Image (spheres, rainbow, N blue to C red):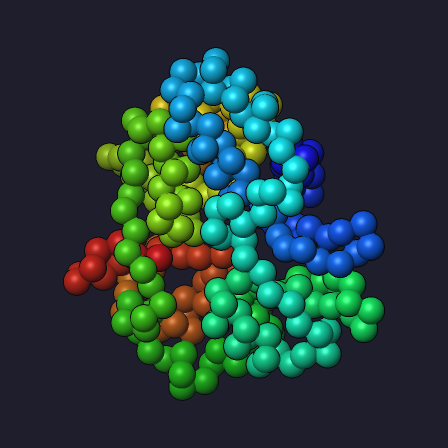
Length: 252
């Protein structure tokens, strides 16, 4: 069920997992973004915290196969385990998805994402080439992102994450800066009612500290090179980084 899959994702500390049949044939992915999407469907009709919690409990009994990629963020493709890095990178670029590598029997062997490709390039020092000397702000890889404030409801912040798919949402208010990702939905595992609370209260609960103690999000100037930005992402072990430019403001 969706509820069981949610618990597994949180326990394993992962974003997505492959969904397979009883014989091991891959059917797709199910991830935390899909869990958020299931909850958002409930929020459309249930506006009060108590009723929302009841609705979520019922929604969590749905079969995972009926909710795969409901968020439009967990699409998948398959490739043979013998495929080259270049072939996998091309699939990821064209389909904007993770790739399931299949063995000769057609069973799932492993998962490859865009982050894995980047890590490979770093390990081989491929990001030191001329192609990575372009300014990250003009590389065409960044997209606009609008910050949210601590006063909005947590459920509305997650709605932004699913609808606009920025990957991560900057939370900014006065001297406070943080980042919200779909991984933060784990805070609603035990008590979905928290999603109806202000984002400040939700973040404080999820991260078990006052909001003032959260590490600020990482940001680079748009004029630094793409190679430098990739280095920073890898050394800080983040999946994305915010970029500031005079022309476009905050981007990711």
